[in-house]
Length: 191
Picture (spheres, rainbow, N blue to C red):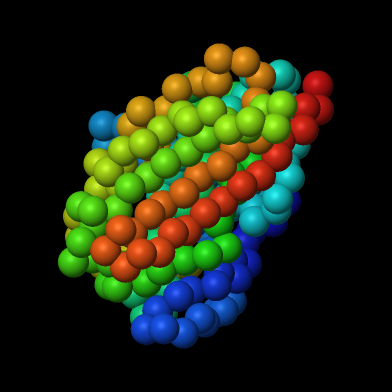
């Protein structure tokens, strides 16, 4: 078991790309109505493929707020889960996107960001989520997120796939700047 997660995002800011090494020691998931659940940092991953228990786990689109030296970073993530109970949420890896924005770069127009997700199966994408990003995340007073922390804010409308999904995709669109952050991964059953 690991006591930290090293996150190496590609941060787009001011026309440049930075790749800092950030050590994450504490992680939480916000999954509705102000509820927060501590997540073991060994569940965080940037891998393109994860293992999942059973046959019905699925991804829930999320926005990740990551502490960084020059203010928090914003990226996409998935609260991959085996169900909606807290114990089921802890059973699976939590993929985090490698592309990120500085929160201060998008803060003036957070209400314009759109969070989308898709279930991937049999070579097809079935839309799962589309909602304003500020509805999913409670960004109130998070400009001063303490160091070495990440908070994953789950989409409020996160349907389970109608059929088994082989993977999941998440996108955060900034129509003001004409940019997108994306995350795609596959999930392999292990039981």
